[in-house]
Amino acid sequence: MMDEEFAALPSHPSDPNIYSFGRIGVHNVVAACLPAGQMGTNQAATVANQMKSSFPSLRFGLLVGIRGGVPNLDNDIDIGLGDVVICQPAG
Image 1: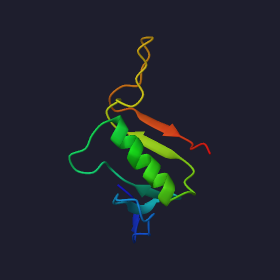
Image 2: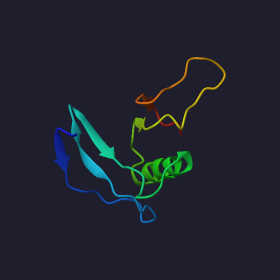
Image 3: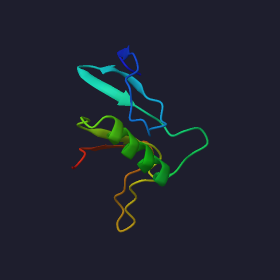
Image 4: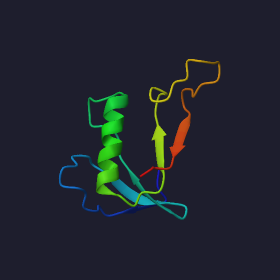
């Protein structure tokens, strides 16, 4: 998935997640997935918050999944299966 993989970096002591580090194009990347057996938006939010604690200099985030995190039931336009959400963390 990455053009180049890097060695692991230290994370926050209370962060139990396993991360992959590397480069895609000119961008340094840190990636995580939910722990085995866990799924859902609450668990995804927990991993995202732990990642922000471990790597406070993150500039952007990608949520890649099965549309569970951002449904819009008010109209016919919705984020669908296979869509990718890109966000910029706010302080």
